[in-house]
Amino acid sequence: MTRDDGYLLDNAQVEAGARFDALGELFDPTTFRHVERLGIAAGWRCWEVGAGGPSVVSWLAGRVGPTGRVVATDIDTSWAARAAGGVVEVLRHDVGREEPPGGGFDLVHARLVLVHVADREQALRAMVGALRPGGWLLVEDADPASQPLICWDEYGPEQVLANRLRAGFRSLLAARGADLAYGRKLPRLLRGAGLADVAADAYFPVTSPACDVLEAATVRQVRGRLVEAGLATDEEIDRHLASVGSGRLDLSTSPMVSAWGRRP
Image 1 (spheres, one colour):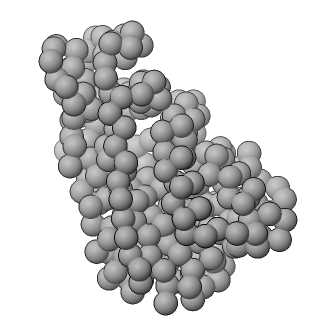
Image 2 (cartoon, one colour; image 1 turned 60 degrees about the vertical axis):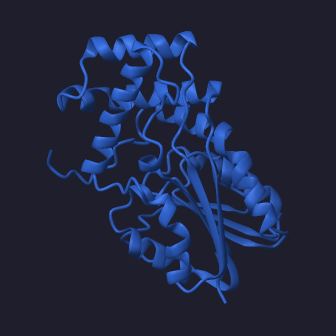
Image 3 (cartoon, rainbow, N blue to C red; image 1 turned 90 degrees about the vertical axis):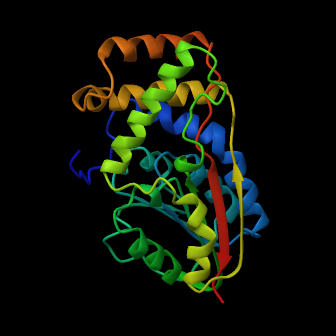
């Protein structure tokens, strides 16, 4: 399979909204817990990298208040733009290729972003460089290689098919340069970038209605790619989507590793 640097899960597709809603339901509580722990307060300047949907941006805006600032960036701002206004500025920006949108941030946050960025090293340098002294970087990213099964309990043909389609999806990601073992590297990378007080944890939902919504939207987004690459047939995809819709599958996600560190 040839290398393709295009983003597999395009924000412009109609399924993107369902994915953002499901990701928010699954991971917003973890993200908010970490940001609260880092001490977010009124007046903070925050940069939300690869914002995607508006949920995290809107929450940050509520925490920093009218004296703060939230800059939300993405290569496609069509969904994040819904949070624009007041203290929120939404900008089209490629973190792996462009200079940061300013500096002196108290918090820089990226969730499920860098695993997809071709030049992850440059992106991480840019994010660290945009912090003020004492500012915090919070990076949350997946580690699909540590848990490749979407059906952890593979007890029947429906689960076998789900896991095979997930393997196909992972191969599509890898062909586009995604690092499927990126999450586990975050503590080391943050220390290597010169950050202090580095720590990390991980969150791994095993089953949830939001996992079903996320899987259905993801499979619909990449359906054509799976068939074109010979990784699945239309009949198999239809059968899998029916299983997901029935609620018979206990679907998980890849573990999301959250790592944070402070610029000295």
